[in-house]
Image (spheres, rainbow, N blue to C red):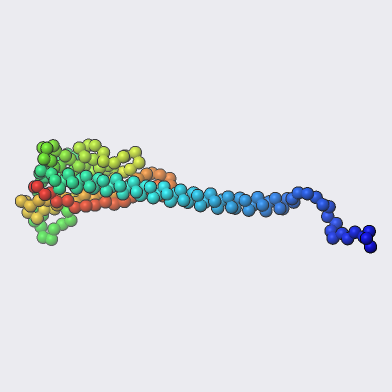
Length: 192
């Protein structure tokens, strides 16, 4: 009985892997790799969107802050107008009851205490101060930009409402890069 060899299988003792084993391992590696890439891509896209939202909020808040300060501390209100060719009107009173919705003006002009005149303008895709862009037009644009002017009486200071929507990367192919945020504030002249 010592010479008896017990053989469980007839397979040869080959060292290596079968084709099915190799395909299975390759499929598992591909699936894990795709999952890792998806997690990293999602994280980067979320980070990119967060940065864009932060940029828009920062720029829009800065524009509103600058416009509010210069308007509220201006020496005088010189008027508003709808079109570039129109003349400025400084009378924003409405005598009709009930009052209609305020007109949406594209230009507002005022004089500061250094006697310099400043004009804020809303164009098709930009907002400017004396012609200087307040945004980087390479990757941001302005839409729905207008000013409203209301006044209780001719001798009262006008209240100016500033409205605009700031968009970043409006033509980007990735949806997370296209961000739009509306901004608005009301300003009363303190020295008028």
